[in-house]
Image (cartoon, rainbow, N blue to C red; front, side):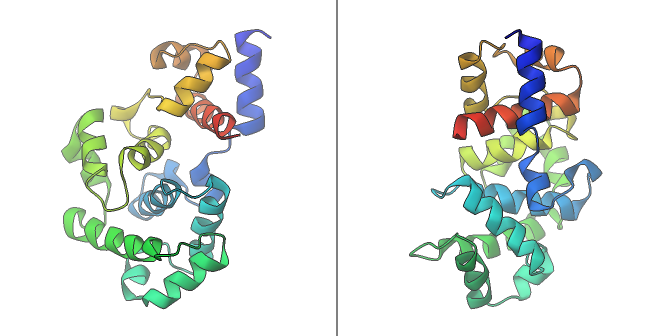
Length: 203
């Protein structure tokens, strides 16, 4: 299969962004959508299968627990109940605590607006470093967030995380982000391709 055909198939079959799947419209580039996606990245970075993390992040939105105010006003038991009912049960209930910590940190450090993190971080390394300062967001979580944030944040584009790059190599696609972005044809297509490669790697 030619590279162009492989790219088209990946985007068509697996190019739905994880942020879209949880109900966060990051293309709008507004604070609430970014916080919801950061919450999703936090959940996805734990040692829990991606489908369960996505289900939990979507369920939090259904219950109104995807906003800083509602998370900070919620009880620990309420957060645990939603997570446990949606495949995100953890024996230590750390997820419920970490999402509360995340809401508090985003409020205290960036006034509820992660675009301030982007501006203060400056370049890709600076943004990733600041993302890793959040509780529950290690290198993996930072990469998950940034992989899709590049849709709207210039400093991140183009980038591939380890999983996407490894899958690109297996499929004989360019592993250099600039070269693969050229092959994809646009920023949105490249972002969807990076997500599709990650989905393929997870499978």
